[in-house]
Structures are given as C-alpha cells and as structure tokens.
Image (cartoon, rainbow, N blue to C red):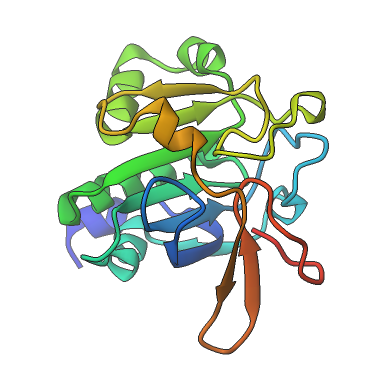
Length: 199
C-alpha cells in the first residue's frame, strides 16, 4: 500500500449503480452518498439522510469498481455529497484518472452557499472535476418531476460545456433497474415507489 492510499479519505456510500439512464446524460454509473445536513422536506430518498450510516469506501477502490468503457460518465448524488467534501472530490479525481466520461454532481447546497463556505482553491478544484453541478435544495412547492433538477429553484452550472441545459432537462424522470439477484430498484428524479425502496 503506497502513501496515497494510506491518506485517502473514506467516503460513506448509501448505494450505487453501475449503469443508469435516469441520472444524467447517456448511460452512467451513479453513487448516492450517505448523510445529509439539509434534509429537504419531501425528499424521495430520506434513507440517505442519517449520520452515521452507509458503507465506507475508499474512493479509488469505488471508482475502479464502477469504471466501464460502455458508460458515458459518473453521477454523484445523495444524501448530500458535498457534506463529504474530501471523500467526494477524491472519488471524482479517481474517476477522472481512469475514465474520460463526464461528471455530474447533485447538491442541495446553493451555488452561492458553496462559494461562501469554500476557499477559492477548493472551488477551482471542484470546477475542474465536475462537468455539471446541479445546486439548490429540493422545494416541494417548486416540484418539476422531470429532468434532473427535481424542483425549479435548482440551478444548473456547466463548467466544461460538455452537456447542455436541454440535455439535463430531457433526462427520463424514472427508471426501474433489475438487479442480478432479481430485485428491482426504482431511480431517477421522480422515481416510482416499489415497496419502500427508491434511490
């Protein structure tokens, strides 16, 4: 084990999918982090809110597990991925080193709040690793149920211009994934409820 692995932050993960068509442009790997300091009313995935919880992952190990030449990129959602700033950015960095696809991050923090709470160097690092950031809390009164925004107050920040706002807004709102064990997972910005499980 080299020094980089010894100091690598741990990322607490709620769940992940290796392939999804409802969590960003194209077919994408998706990670949902565990823990959320915002706790938006009406969030469709409240199981991701708790601290502690989830499964601890080394970001480089998770990136290697998820990488697939047939996916178009990685989406990181939550929970609240920016509550685990170092772990999330370490995952994005590890992904960038082994896959050319785009990175989409969904956060409940507004862009203004992120700018106010982080140093300029941290913001530059985030922008270098993320192609599209969707920012802002989910507001039930502004519910969209389409695209990736969830509610109309959320803002879309394209740092690389590799995806357009039109692409983000045209993503399917719901997807049902059949797992290898035969179980079903409903996902997307407006997922169907299958039993009690949606991500």
